[in-house]
Length: 342
Image (cartoon, rainbow, N blue to C red; front, side, top):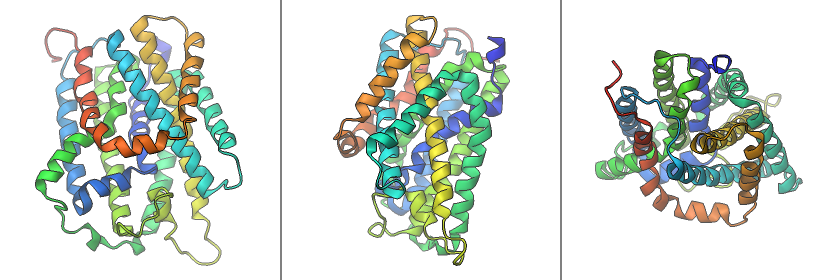
């Protein structure tokens, strides 16, 4: 196990990408539809709630790595649908903005190869890839967004309380489902170098995620009115298309596509590995070759369901009413009875 120990930054960038990945897709539009111009206040409240949850758990004696058989099966089912939906959204997005003549199956095949290859590289390989590529991805995205700042109209962020304080508070609670992947953070504690490194990684993950989500979402709201946005394009891509730097520097969307694809490759590989990790810990299975591919095939098959995106998108508000409880309550199953960490 010693050779598989991972450091603070490796663990941090792994989960920052897992949490923020959905904001490269369509999460900012969903946030805006939920809270309107009060989205900034809602995000602040949402992160305060999540920090409170994290503060509770980081002081507890978490030594288990399994949520139990039933708990793990439930989480595996949730994450399989989540990853399958993300895979399908990535595929459709790349087809719309770049490979318009290519088949969906061809584009999805590229993502599938990256997902399986990443998962087979193991936790150490996944974390090494994240510590190298994740800062680059977020730097490119943020630089591109800042480059479009001249086109932003921050009056669109008023009134700051949007649909009202009660609506903001309720939705901030339900949107703790944003941290669904953070539930898996606790299962990687044995891989962390020590207790302090693990706690530091959790603190940094939430702080960096807060900054990235706030910047992307508020810039999107300040860029487009609710009726002016184009649904089929990811919000970050729509912001980048506002950049105008003369005739010789016009293809900033290519930089977005590179960062977008790298983020997808890292996310899919990491999530497939973590799904296997849940199953292995729950059923005490040795080796990964016998189990990893079946999970990959289940995710791939689910993503091929044509109505998947429509069904989940239509029901997402109802699903969030329940999913927020996963990152808040599921880690209770990992706590060993006894005293708090001193």
